[in-house]
Length: 483
Ligand SMILES: Cc1cc2nc3c(=O)[nH]c(=O)nc-3n(C[C@H](O)[C@H](O)[C@H](O)COP(=O)(O)OP(=O)(O)OC[C@H]3O[C@@H](n4cnc5c(N)ncnc54)[C@H](O)[C@@H]3O)c2cc1C
Image (cartoon, rainbow, N blue to C red; front, side):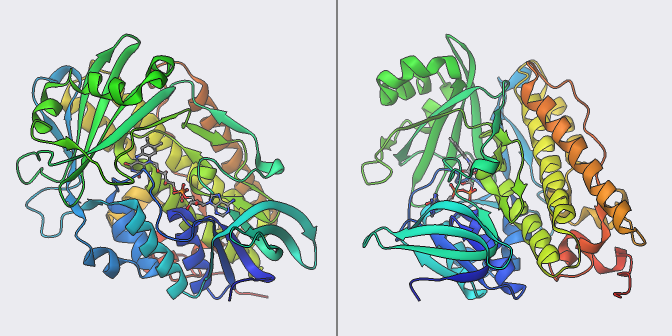
């Protein structure tokens, strides 16, 4: 099939967010079309992943075996030369080394990883249209739903797809949908990133050899830091994240700017002493990116939802991008399914998605801004992050900790009236939008204490197999009888 005219769900963008959502919706029995503009594997930054994505979300679309069959680099955590203990290196581990099954993550090349997710979405039943570029989303009508206008890049043939729900998963340079256009940029994370690739870079001693390594450095505009991500086949992704004021000078010669900064980092220099800049495409490029920390003012409008980078992104530190993209895709799929089945009004379902993703965003926002306080000791950073993660539904669920921690997710509203459900959804949404806009605009290190976990909306949790992940069966309140 190389064209489609109708679907329950039209997903635009086949990155991690779009593929996970398309796979879950198709698996839930919704006819799902996934449009991806690239015809084959494409390069993307965002190589270092969290256990959350790999161990809990990917199995839901059957991607686990194919990912395990690759030779991606196993990552046990992040290792730092950072803060008041910068003279030593210290590690934030995902779990104790001696645990039988410690949570592990991977560093991946996104071209192959994203292909696996696309194939998994297809295996779940989604129709993948490759080489098709969506150009606009129209109002549509009550009978046919929203319309997506798209064209085939090779033939320039144009077509329209009508869907009951449209998902914008087009990433940071997202497809413009006027109703969802407004975005608020962070004042705190005003950064620029510059990065390239080396072959033959050294590794930390085992068992830290797959860890991402971070080292701080000073620039004329303040403190910056290096990421050093060991990839497979001797390749290493190395970048610097610096205050945005460095951008003007950096633009003149990004390669020289990156090299000059790396030369001031003793540990990174040592790791790169036998390495040479990669010479094969796409790794022979040095890239620049700025203004990447933002949240959309609204994540959904009637019949449309934004997920992944199209909705929000915090910061490069600590690999939250693909986690927010895939966890958000899971939340959005759950809400779409609940809304399209008629189990719950669409605005309530979407408020649940948005407020829960905003909460995860806020946990990472506060956690990461705490790491930028360079005066702290290593144990303070680790304690700070562990405490914050108590408020993370996404991360805690993935580590199974809610089994012993019922406070982590609170199921309520089993006997809610529709009016109560609406009111609760609206309260959650208003609270989280207000909280996020405060986070995005403050100027300085963390002043906010994390907020309590949101009450869940019962009807969303009761149905799907992936509800089991959100709330294990034995902790659910029985679904109210349908009338
Ligand atoms: C410097 C930097 C470093 C980062 N490092 C990390 C990291 O180490 N770990 C991490 O987890 N995250 C990292 N990220 C973030 C990560 O790259 C993103 O969060 C992640 O890729 C978001 O996934 P997505 O599916 O939302 O979007 P994307 O991965 O951007 O996918 C969007 C897809 O949509 C397609 N598309 C776009 N427009 C259209 C259209 N009109 N029609 C059809 N298709 C379209 C694109 O071709 C693409 O395939 C980093 C980000 C930056 C800026």
